[in-house]
Every structure is written in structure tokens, then in C-alpha cells.
Image (cartoon, rainbow over all chains, first blue to last red; front, top):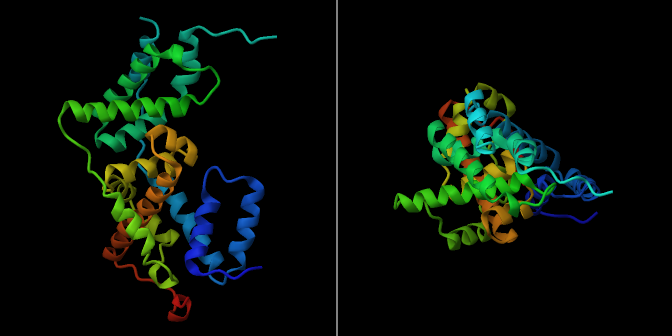
Length: 76
Length: 197
């Protein structure tokens, strides 16, 4: 497998996490990442950061009243 | 046999309404407050219903609604003669070319336990402190899971710009979270040897 530097490692990790990456592409990219000495650590950290941001970001709740108001838009 | 065409009312409730939570979260992080966010979501649904004949059943309702919301938000700013924080894209390109984080030492050890110590507000504050164009791509990609192609269509920019904007946005977000972790007294626990490329 070809050698690659840290910048390229970051690029591949970023590519892995792209929402439109195909499954078979992901598997290849994942194997390449794992072959880099720092790959598993940087990959895990990136995954944690992304998961935690998604999990922790504030999502204000939508009230039943607001849903009713919006439903009325279609029934006026 | 052709599927029977639904009424606009049924289409509205079955395809548009399920995205209300996602739209509300996006609107909240654009406007910074829940009342303005609700107004923006309501305006989005009003416009979606008014132009419902332009929507093709079974296609990407979520992306279509997000595009309407984004445009409604921009129009509100125009009306108020205010402009969201603008970004110098030359600076973005320059930053990427000179990416300073080309070794392990530039990566702060943002471990899971640091996030566990956060109350939740820190992550939202960090996201909300990003300039609008960067905040938007983070919300669309990392929070809502849109693909680069969908994001490009929602905010009318080329896919390459989505990629570069996300790259810069993530670095800014990590910097903000890193500064927060350091202010909480966290240190990078990795050894000097680990930090060598």
C-alpha cells in the first residue's frame, strides 16, 4: 500500500465521513486510514468529535401548537 | 399501475411536515432565538404550500424545504438591511493551501471525556459563533446529514466550495472547542512521542 503523509491522512478521513461516499469506497478508504501509523487514533478522534457535535447541538422542541398552526396552512 | 396522485393537503402533511424538527433546529441556529426560528419555519411552510405544484412527489422534500428556509432567511436580512457575516473566500483558499495542521502535534486531544464534561451549551455556542456561511455548511452536513451535492443545491454554490467551506468550518469549530477544553484545564494527554509525525 502507498505511503501518505498526515495531510493526506486527514483528507482521506474527511472523505470517509462524507455523507455521499459509497460503501465499497468507504471500506477501501478505511483500510488505507488504518495502515497509517496515526490513522486509527486520528480517525477515532474525528469520529468522536463529529458524533458529539451532532449529539450535543441544541435542538429546540417544536410545540404541538406550532404543528397545529402549520397544519392549518394546508387547510385554509 | 400509476400511483394515485395525492392531494396538496396530503402531500403537505405526509412529505413536508415530518421535517419540522430539522427545519426548526436549522432555523434556530441561523436566527439564535426560538421565536424567530418558529416564524422562519412557519414562513417556510407557507411558501412550500404556495408553491407545492413545483414540488415533484417522492423527491427530496427535506432538501427542497431547507432551500426555501435558507432563501427566506436571506430575504429577512435584506428587508432588515442587515447582512450576515461575510466570508473572504480568498482567505479560505489561502488557509487551505497553508494548512497548518499537517502533523499530529496540531491536533488537540479532544477526547470523549471532554465532551462529557460539557453541558451542551458549549457545543451550540461554538457552532453559533461561526460566521453564517460556515455555520450553514456544518449544520447541513454534520447535523442534518445532507450530501455535498444536496448542500450545493440548497445554498447555490459549487461542490468544491462546499468541501472547502466545510474544511475551514470544522477547523474553526475544533479550535473553539479546543480553547474551551483548555480553559477548563484539560491538557493534551498524549506523549511527545505520539505527537511526532
